[in-house]
Image (cartoon, rainbow, N blue to C red):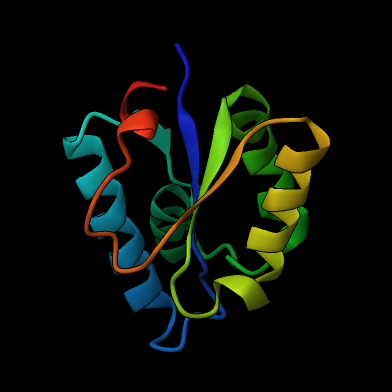
Length: 121
């Protein structure tokens, strides 16, 4: 089974990390409803960090934790939320996918329409 890796900013999102988490969840839900198979690291990691006491901005923890999902994903969807282009994590994820020769797709924010080719791809 193939799926997309959904990249969104977190610590660089201007409304704060809690709102970044909520917006990532809203975008992921919209994509899932449209039939897109995906993994969203922010919606996975934010609750874990919140309730376990782990720091979500500790790249020594989260980059290795997310790497297997990047390795198995068919490509990356980058949501151009405010701060995406200043995010260390999003930049790192894009480079991992480029180095692997996997597609890097950008979605305008707010996501209003889901491109057909990512629904079936």
